[in-house]
Image (cartoon, rainbow, N blue to C red; front, side, top):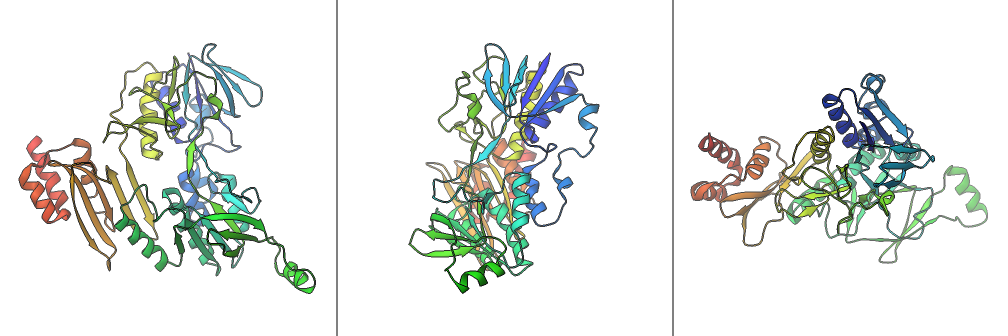
Length: 437
């Protein structure tokens, strides 16, 4: 039997290794469109800060790992899929037949339709090649603009700020929304993250949009000669929504991602309303013997039962295990993905789990210490915790995930105790665990 996996990120790698353990003699081909060995995008910020070398981003460090496990790595991009013929056409013209196919092509960065986004001084931060382009532009004193302060944007923000800060440069972050990380944090939590980031030297502009980016054209004459003598690389002029303009050495676009599924047009694989591949709880798509996992899928939200695109690596790895097992003939099932976000911002840890935004008919408790940048909010549905947001605390934080995932009933007494002091969630976790034992 031949297994073809499109995508050589963490999802594709975990799935391939799962298949190999269960099917020692099957053929496995993993297709990736970058001229790199399989690596983790989540390691790129550490590369930018100089904490690791490029080798530190690799998912498997042993060069012989793939040969030893008889996993063929194919460098190409999928152009189309013929589900009836069970084949994949690649960008190099090669056609790969398959018995089982996994779609694990992840996400792609999205750029807003703004004039000037095509300029070479506007870069994404998604691939190793992007990281190299950023490092090449991080000359001493560089003034950097970052567009986007969502989850990915905030991860990049710290790395860029630390990098430019070492050489006297600066970082400005603009976000169209009214707060940072609006899709993972409550307004109060976002405000704490913002103030902490500003204390760390980042200029944060919310409710602000970029309307144009253009190459900076210096004035003619002597000023132009002086400018060219002092600047080996072109700067860019950025126009904001209020009409003001500022000069930056380069711009990083971190305005979000979308499922990378362009190659599926006409394939018969169902794409959902959120733009991802629809899968069932076995990670099967609507096409026979075609599975999907990771950021490119729409899967069930554990908390709500609704479909969602849950583009986080732990969820992708869980789905890869299920998909790989079932491609190898197993009967694994997923209970659905749990929204789980953990963000480190200049040493400040922020976490959100489950329905952190609450539920209709539910209630909540919220405690904040702004001076200490400490915050906790619990969301209740009857006597169950269904969501949580925590800033500035890591101790026993996994207990909140446990309470949410198990759907443990607290009872009136423990709910009342947590409403009086939500910091006692670990005590509540132990009490419910003992009652279930």
